[in-house]
Image (cartoon, rainbow, N blue to C red; front, side):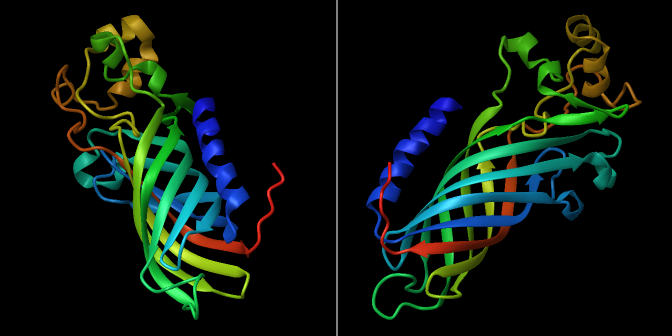
Length: 263
């Protein structure tokens, strides 16, 4: 993670130093998730998200944004009648560093007679850290360490808690004053992992899990009460579909026309 921060710093500092038209701003909104424990987005699982960003306006149509975001996602089988028997749930905090390239449909910010508003779209690349957890008897338990699907036992390696994602989204921005811009946006992150929720493949042998990780691993791997449903090798998730997380909100930014570098 330290190396990732250094890389972003080397990209970000020159952008701040040499830009003659850049913005600094905040984002406040909500986050959600779609994956094995939420085949469809459950509005009730929406959580608070916030962050800050630096943006360089490259032209009247393109902007380059560096964004730091902190959010939370969660899912519960009880939100879906056909998944209640499986009875799995999770929550995870996500810390994200993202680079996004924006395209404005109307000329905005730069040039002669720019519009005061425009719809826009964006894409880019994100790196993020997550930590799937669940509550058991009032205690928050980290699921990654329990190897709930026997991934370490089968392949001597687990999934990484540091991953990459591709953000895809859009929004609408408006110039409130000559120096302040405001926008509303929604971005979907296609994660390069199927383990945001700690669910991906099949159930693993309960006795082997207990021998290696203790009773807690067995209890949280298989939360059903029916052995016919959760026998060893039975499907637990769908690894052919990667997970998504969603961040949307309102941004407000301050435009600085003549930046001075103090680094």
